[in-house]
Length: 152
Image 1 (cartoon, rainbow, N blue to C red):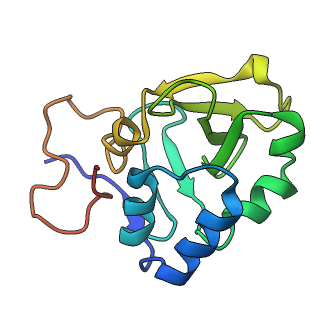
Image 2: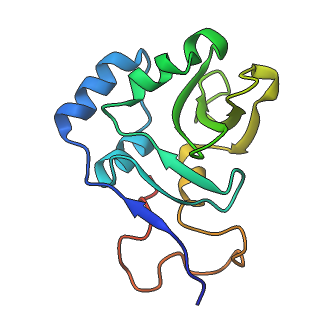
């Protein structure tokens, strides 16, 4: 059995989710809200680039987008996490429905550097808690525990 890492956080409160939805300026995806209800942030393996993720808490998403200059430098993208290092994870709000997930380096933070890593947040969640070294058909959580966020 292959080991994987996913360290979930406590679920987001409904009040935090309501405030995030009001401040976001666009309609949040049901998948992202479901993930926050399951784990308000979290860290672990990701089976696609960048290989590791650190998801932002609902209470921090707005301020971290602002602090990193996402609205200024990456119009049309909206950050929800990073790899804990040099890569920002974002929704591509102009990429159609559902919004694709793209990765952008913090330096240089330029739209031309964006790389699509998942077709949707649902697709992205399928990669959480899996190592890129796992065979594609490996069970994500054979013990049935809280190994990864729900999809959908």
